[in-house]
Image 1 (cartoon, rainbow, N blue to C red):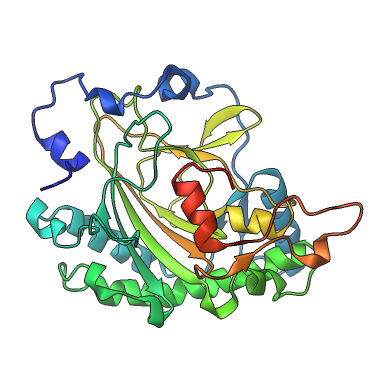
Image 2 (cartoon, rainbow, N blue to C red):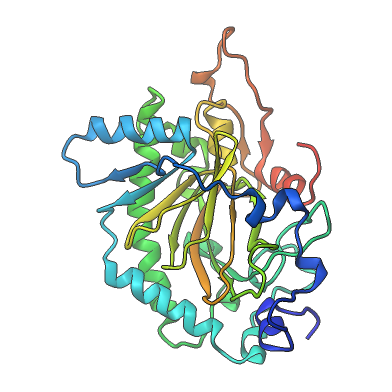
Length: 335
């Protein structure tokens, strides 16, 4: 195996309180030192069953301006489907290493899809305490089943069903986010790629860690997507940077967590904020999450929407092809 997986490190020779140095974060990133433990506000929770659509729009717009993140309850995706999605993902990560490596991201490939342990460059050369599986789930023309596990056998059907259900939620989110900016319902989605928006599923796998105080599952970042819709498991770990503090996200069973990503921040000319967030890990339990990243096609140009730009509000971002934006961000180059 060319790359050592974090899951393999855990099951090898770790002593009780020891992790390899490449996982130890600088002090200003270590969760034990930097997590805020005072009284904290909760991440906004939005109930999609509210009959007052104007109220939903107001709450979503406020959360997206003030936080860049919110949780959604009564979203319409059946709870048993979410649980099955989690089950098949867990079953994949419980397979023997050689079975998982069949889906490994090819070393020379330009794709992000596949099983792996590293996404972008880290400024300090540090590693994240996590493994992952990436594959697109929509539209059909973008799907590469080479990266979809064949074991467990139900994996494909479950992900296909989840793709259809999450699309319904995403369409509502785009509509209400657009209306929250005072725009027509379809403007924001069209600005992010319309029907060609790509749905990229990622399973994050954060194994138990002997020193969760020193490392991170994922270092602090904003998502380069337009928006991310995430299912967590019951092990807490998501932290959000708010009012100069790292605060823990509360786990709400069955809720979806929605992140505003860089592309919506750009489209809204900074009115909506991409959320700065990170993931901590647990000493005893495996944390997992299932984000779906909503991304424009690579050649699609994203810039501030013309309706939101005027002499008083000049553009804060330059229009850019999404593939160029992604390349710069993942390689820590200026935009």
